[in-house]
Each structure stands twice: as C-alpha cells, then as structure tokens.
Length: 559
Image 1 (cartoon, rainbow, N blue to C red):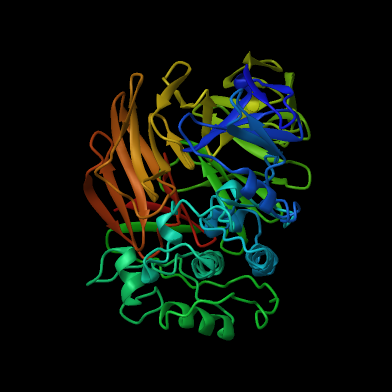
Image 2 (cartoon, rainbow, N blue to C red):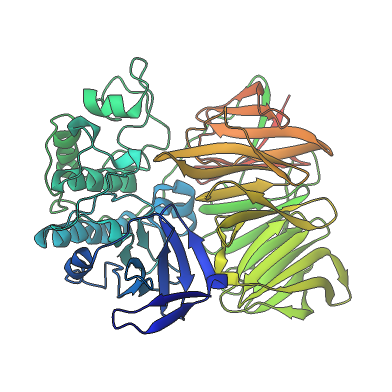
C-alpha cells in the first residue's frame, strides 16, 4: 500500500497492486470503479496547486482533469485522483488506421463528429489561457459512440506553470522551433485532423531530397506537394476549402484555429474496384468480389472473411484454392475463432463449435464475461475479464468439454493492442506460445501496439519522443528487438514457420511483399504486385498467401 494524504491531512491508502498503466511521469492505479490515482515517480516534479486550481475551469465531459491532490507526509504533491475511463475509450490513433476504420464501419461523418470535439477542446482551453502542448494521438481518446476525452491534462501549460516542452515529434511545430504556444496547439490540431481524414501524417510520404520529417516541416514539403511520393493509403481531403486551409498551414506557415464550416456530411458509397490480376510469376485468385469485406482472419488451414452482414468461413487446406465451409449471420454470432481442428464462434456468452452442416455444439464448461478481451495464441485462446484469465485449448475438446486453465489476475492491467500486454508493477510483459504452453516474457518498453505470431512480432512504442515500429523475437525468456530496422508504420505481417527457430516473414508494402528471414529480419526476396499496400493484411496458409487489400480478398501463389 502507498499512503498519501489529502489537502485536509486525511490518510489515503492506494493499493499499488491495482496499477493499470505506467508512463514516464507516474503510475495509474485504480481506486474504485469511478476513480484512479496518478502517482508520480520519485524525482518527478508534478502539478502545482496553482495549475490544479486553473485546470478546474475545464469541462469534465471533454477533459480528464485532476479531482483531488495527494500529498506526502512532508506536504509535497505526489499525485492526484481523476476519472477512471473504461476500456471503451481508445487512442485516436486507431482512427488513422484504415483496417480499423473498415472493420468498425467508421465513416467520414463519424470522423467529422470527432473532429468538431477536438477543435472545441483547443478552443475551450485557449479561452481559459491554457495551452495543451502535447496534443498527440495517444493523449486523445474516443469511443465508438463518438465521445472524445483529453487526458494528460496535468502537463498543460497554465498562466502559473509553463509547459515542460516534452512533445511527440509528429506534432511538434519545427517550422517555429518547437516552441509551445497557442500556435503550436493549432499546428498539432491540424496534424491530428489531417491524419484523421487522410490516413497519413501531413509530412509522411517520400521525398528524394529531404529525408527527415522535421526538415520537411521547415522546408514546407507536405505530403500533397507535387514532388512527394505518396503512400497508397493516402486519401486526399474531399472538402476543397478544408484542403486550402491545410495548404495555408503547410505551404504558407500560417497558424490559426481550424474549423469545419465547409466540411459537410457526405453520403457513403461502396467503392468499385477493377483489378487486373495477370502476372508472369504470380497466380492470383479473387474471392467474394461482390461482397463488402471489412476484415479477414486465417490460420494455416482455415479462416474467415467478415462482411457487413456475414462471417464466411473457408477451408484453406488445398494449394491454390479456398473452399467455402459455411456462412454465419452476424446478427446471430459475435465473433469467430479458428483452431486447426475446428471453427468456434461466440454466441452471446456461449462458446460454440461450428460444424459444416450448421450444427452448433455448445462448450459446457466455459462462458464469456460481459467485458472480456480475447486473444488467440496458436491453439490457445486467452480470455481476460472480471479479474480472471482463462486459457482455452481449442484443439482439446472432449464431447462438449474443453481443456481450460483459470488464473486469478488483475485484468485491468491487461489490454489487447491487438495482442495482450500486461503491466505488473511497472514491468511490461507479453504472452507467447512456447509450442506446448503459454508463457510470458518481460519487455523493456511500454508498447502502444503489439502483434505476434508465435515468437515473432512487431511492437510500436515511443522513444525520445519518436514513434518506433520494430520487429522483435523471443528466444527462450529473452525479448530481442530488431532495433536496426525501423519500419515506417505498424503493419499486419504474416509468418511461415519452417522449423523450431526459424521461418519467413511476409511484410506488405506499397506494390510489393517483402520476404524476410526471421533469424535476422533481413529481406531475402520481394514479390512485386500492385494488389498490395502497406495496409494490406497477409496470412500464410496451406492454400497460399491470403491477402485483404482495400476491401478485396485475394489468394496469391508464386508460379
């Protein structure tokens, strides 16, 4: 227990075993279902009473502000309490991801709703002489119902407390020397809104002459400049007047509060795609070309495609072809899970095995909780929620009973991004399948996103105010980053295991698939095809390489 004191001198006990997350300044610890505490690390100079009193003017429907200050026995401020946000709130960076937006049917109209709240948050803060400073995509949260929350408010600049100057590089205004001010907030807001509507940072893309993002900001070379090679995911702004305002920012160097006066709601229509799939060295088959596919998931011998209305299950055992297994209506099923021996589905709180004739066999010794998070590691299905963790062995079903292992955990320090990361007292861990059971390994970074296949993965984290996307592998109980390879984005790779310690990684890029050795992550071959982009999802199966690209489903095989 950590003992802190209120302003009136009353002792408050904080249970440090209920730590949810930890950052560079402090730990976030659960107090109850409505409140958490932020306790500063030793040596960190936190919020002052003057700043605390100034932040009280901010509306709590948008800003997560300190509620009550906590003091040490010597009277120093060591933390504060604040609103506990449920797991329904996600970093706004998710809305920069086309796959996420496709899966959750995120429209420009939804993004307009989010954008208006972001603009409003800056306007309100400035009305009260408060400068946000680090207005980045990880400090801005949203829910799928369209609500926005601004966090990390104790770092805001107030008339009595200057900003620390620590900003994420992506939103730092290098044209004006990175100085924190109202104008720098306008620039940060512009970056977030541009990213929101285009799926690309305004200074991403490739310049043959200027490599660093901060230099391009200074030289006024945004992504829409003629000489910039644009990523395929980049979607130009559809509202002419809003685009002109971005040009005033990035070409003209102006700084002002953006508005969406001319950005009207738009009707959504399904994009039609004409694809030429004749290659000298590649066999390509397209499936479900008349369906609106929003997601896919495959393992070695089976998979499914998710459309707006159905889950379409496939066998992927035959080289060069996918075979329909069965179609399930999404109105009746919540999710599909894959095992080498069978398909499973979530139906309400029940886990059911799906037979080819449509018969459902309910697993009798397990039920989902209402707030569970689910991640699969090969044949082990991990379910976390209500302070319980279940390991379900999907290939070990006897009649209607599945082999399970239940462990009591503090489930709120475990989150799926999309694989599970766990914070235990400031030490972050990830889970992996050893080949026989599920184990965990300590990692030296705080992950923002995490994707694994076996002992290979990609992790996104922040180092020295810069976002890093890097491969890693787990050797025994050792986590090893491939720090020499900085990926431009977090991507959905695939992995073909060849033996116990090695295999091939298939990495989607614009107009090509890179093939890397898993031992050293070096590129050994390239498959050229305009069907793929850096946002494509790849899965290695017995049928070939399954690819979801821009809503289209392909099966690729080399000739």
